[in-house]
Amino acid sequence: MAALEPDADLEAGIDAARSFGLGFWLAAAWLGVILLLALAANQLPLEDPAHMNLLARRAAPSLHHPLGTDSFGRDLLSRLIFGARSSLLIGLIAPLIGVSVGGALGLLAGYFRGRLEMVTVGVMDVLLAFPPLVLALAVTAYLGQSVANLTAILGLLTIPSATRVARASSLTITQREFVVAAQALGAGHPRILVRQVLPNVMGPLAVLFLLAVAVIIVAEGALSFLGLGVPAPAPSWGSMIAEGSASLDIAPQIAFVPAAAMFFTVLAFNRLGDTLRALSDPRRAAP
Amino acid sequence: MLGLVGRKLVYLVPVVLAVTVLTFLVASLLPGDLAVAMLGDQATPENVAALHRKLGLDLPLWQQYLRWLSAVMVGDLGTSHRTGETVIHAIGGRLPVSLELMGLAEACALLIGVPFAVICAARRDSALDRTLSSGAFGMLSMPPYMLAILLVFVFSIRLGLLPSTGYTALSQGLVANMRSLALPAATLGLVEWPVLMRVLRADMIATLREEFIVAAKAKGLPRWRILLVHALKPSSLTLVTVTGLNLGRLLGGAVIIESIFALPGLGRLLVDSIYSRDFIVVQGVVLFIALGFVSVNFAVDMLYALLDPRIRHGRA
Image (tube, rainbow over all chains, first blue to last red; front, side, top):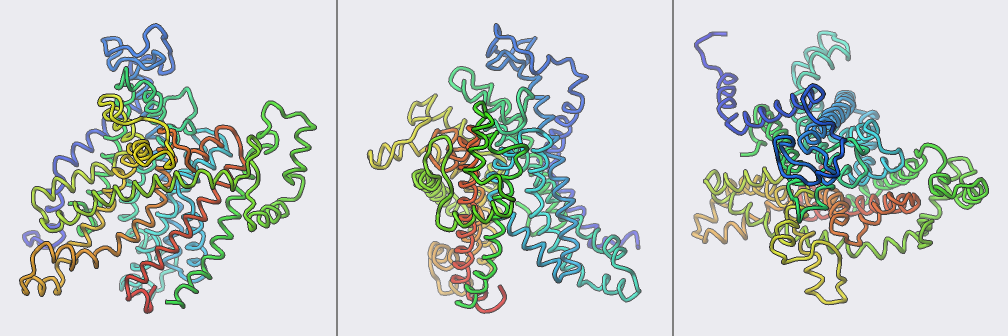
């Protein structure tokens, strides 16, 4: 490639870098801090998030409790950081399951077409017939509450959209010249799928993954808010908001602190997903 | 058009059947014995055996399914084992509240989303467009439960304007009814409008580039007329679909909102039944919601075809 010729790709790259903007970096920084705190939670000098001190209920922020305490006298900062653990753990693993399974199904369906595609699309239509939160509620009700069950069911709910995205990309890529060329050269299906089709499906799937993380964090919060998510006494942002909402009139910060943490985290994942989408498909990004 | 309806209906049948199978199987996921779980503390061997016979749990799974399905076909979703009320009756009592909540929320979302979308599309890339679009993007990250407590905090705790919980039926006066639904409907509507606005804005910007808009401008038609009469209708197609698809989101939101505001709706029935381990009701409500959701999406598909001749004639 001639070094002095600014080619189209490079220009697009520069434009994208410019469009990263302050919002992107703030989002990345916030997620970095939250992730670091969640990972290092055990090493930090924090009070046990389940330790109750009924003499210091709903205490205002102090040196000992930087964010104050909740209705049971538990340290809010400690619960916030340990809550980030559950939110991020479920929020990252569940979409990872969904995007892997759904991505693989969609990839194969779009490439092989035929009966496989029909069955895959049919199964997804059945899954999509249930409003996601309703299905999640019902399944956790029957299976019982645990982080593993929660992750599995929320992962299952991510599968249909991942399948749809992967199938759409795989369908168009399969008809492109380079795939036909590879077929003409005698490359086998596995080789074409992995070397030609998969790399081109990864972009849209990565965008979907980031946006799904945001959706799953909200969904996990909703289940925990209803008391059907992460089992107590382990803290989760959703259950913290629910507990805090009972004392909204005397100590609103108990609900608003975890709410703000969740809002900024969800916003940050949405921002990253949107930026990544702008990189791969400028037409569909938010302004 | 009739052919399209027929084709879609033929496809709908296996989907609906699969939905019933899945709903049934989810219930059999329960680790251990459904009867034991339902009876809780009162699970003596005699009680368990009696409930087994009553629910047909001693039959093989496929026979249980067929038994259940044939009852469902005639509208028998079973009987709550706690209250003795039939599930279909319980649903019938709760459904109007949920429908009213969702209808008001959707109206609220459209009232905010459509004008904003039109303004933003008309003044694309202006400071106003950027502000509103970023606002919408931010709102997308706001879960309904978060917005709910925020609105409760401002409007009922600080300002004391509206009740934070409880429901007053329409029969006791429109004003009281609206007051009890104001905060819940506003919460759901505020969560929904960004979705509608973003879709409509994008479509509207595309429409405004079309030649017939240029022609309308050349004729000297007033700007508002071009925007509201010529551009809005052809841009609303995706909005119709999204409104239908979003019903699932709206329903999920309603489950939480009804719990927060103590509204006696379908979502609250579901959550309460889960709390009280009334699994027959859970199963019935889930099936009812799923079937309703499938039917609405079918209706939206048809509406879309009716609105857009390109789909009606061929490639669907």
